[in-house]
Image (cartoon, protein in one colour):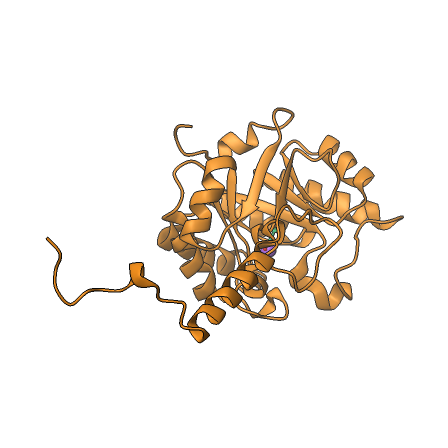
Length: 269
Ligand code: KIV
Ligand code: NA
């Protein structure tokens, strides 16, 4: 485990070993992700997972920067990618550059991720030409939940062509990788074949060049809802609830603090 992985290293992994990506929002979780993963993504999912927001739409630049700074302190190896929040890039290339540059300068991010396909390709090209690596994100784009009409599977039937065109557009505009969210597995495989840069799937099948999930989902810490694509590897939320109940019972029964947790009047020799 040596030097920091770069967007260029990730790009070069197309067709090689699968790329492992997880979200992270805090320093201690970032340090854990760093041990086993290639990419740590500060996703705007932070709004729902850690701040109790009903969607990602309320996430701000300030929230993304604060969490990205925390995550950067936990990483030595993984490539740090930070989501651009809703409203920070959609007006056009100049607005996107201004906000992406802030994220890069203030956090140590190595790349930004933004949602969208053909309509955002010019913005991707503009950022990449000016020194900002971009990860694309097509298929289900949660910042567009209101126009998509929910968190539905994308790219079924004739809609496959739209999603494939979106992936091609951001790849051809210079994105170093593209997240494919919630697509039929066969479409995930087809797009992975069609574009020259790695696909990172989330609910897009096993043939993508890599996979990403939300860390609190795989740990069983975020249990508000559970998409089909989540594999829950542990029930840490359940464990935490049991620990907290034990502590509360101990305090109420005065069995905590015990002798080993208290201070004597005199210093012992
Ligand atoms: O915000 C997020 O966590 C994401 C990934 C799940 C792709 O965008
Ligand atoms: Na996101």
